Length: 205
Image 1 (cartoon, rainbow, N blue to C red):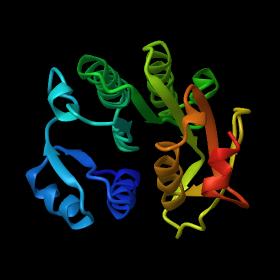
Image 2: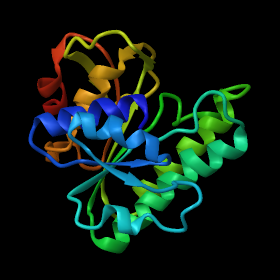
Image 3: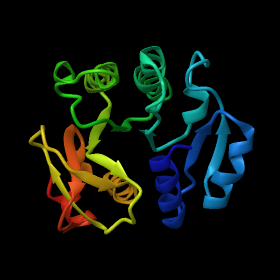
Image 4: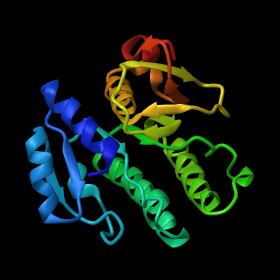
């Protein structure tokens, strides 16, 4: 039910997919249904396993986050623990494709200070767990997220350490494109606002 996830669910529904979104509160179901998505009620932190939620899926996408107002403990249970549970669930039910929405700086969490450091440490550990899992993974590390309208044009790079903004609309479009792009399997890349159309950018990876 996060900002990127809702945008992605809407894009997938428009393409004819029946995407599921995990929600914690029943009151959030209407938001997903309005987009053409299937709400699944569960708790990323409290549930011992997420396997029943991903049974029969072609791909899973981790786009959850504890949020900027949360403390280090919740960053461990959501940004790390939730991502790990989704890896384990995918392995348990035979979903081979996993797309992770990570973060700029997850390759160097030691360089961060204040509240960003525990967040980036959690994201870094989650990324490492996914990479070691044997799943067909793609790790997407967006720049600073904005709510500006998407342009449909981005810059992607596998040379990590960049800086820049990117609208959430365009991040969702990149993820949707990645799901059908075998060339992104095993790839970690950053995405920012840029000049290349999303499909062309993803194909270039």
